Image (tube, rainbow, N blue to C red; front, side, top):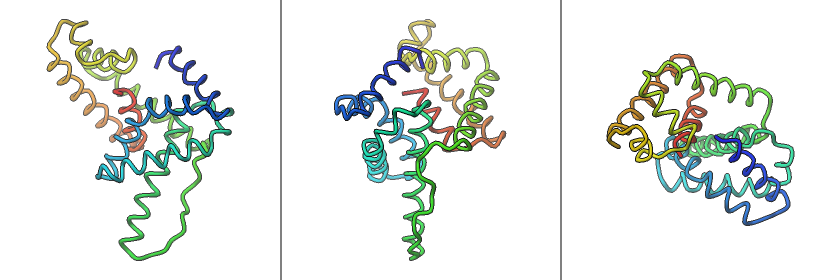
Amino acid sequence: MSANHTYQEHALLLQLVKGDENAYRQLFISHWNQIYQVALGFLKTPEEAKDAVQTVFIKLWEKREKLATVENFDAWLFIMARNTILNILKQKATAASNYNIADVLPEDYLTPAMLLEYKQTTGLIREAIAQLPPQQSLIFRLSREQGMTHPQIAHELNIAPATVKSHMVRALNNVREYIRKQGGHTLIVCWLLIKSLS
């Protein structure tokens, strides 16, 4: 993510703290697909994934005053999305077992332990990318760090778009496998990998 993008997002967050609906809309447009894709991967149905996204953004609006003190919005949003998805999964499990268990998952505040887990998984992803074959690593980095689309990468490297897609699929599989072997947190990995491709 570029420094300019980070600065623009921080400016949007400050506007959102003041109740700016346009800033809220821009953040929604920027992040809804990332949350939806992760939610869909775990909840399995588009309806539940859409409900999860809606819940996350309702909570974001309700807790907007706290954003002024948030140093890492992506990690904060991840924790909120993670807790929302886990709550939905837990509700499904308790409904299936006819238990009426109160919600005991932690609030979506970014605790030091959660931030450490997020940073450690980010580090594992960097390690995994460093171990990719050169062409996969280059294509992955162009997509992730420069925000280039597959057609743009294909044009830049003078290769077919299908070749770019093939390298990206293999790169993602290699990264996931590396993280799995290192014991990384699956939900964080999904979040960060989807973020890198959106």
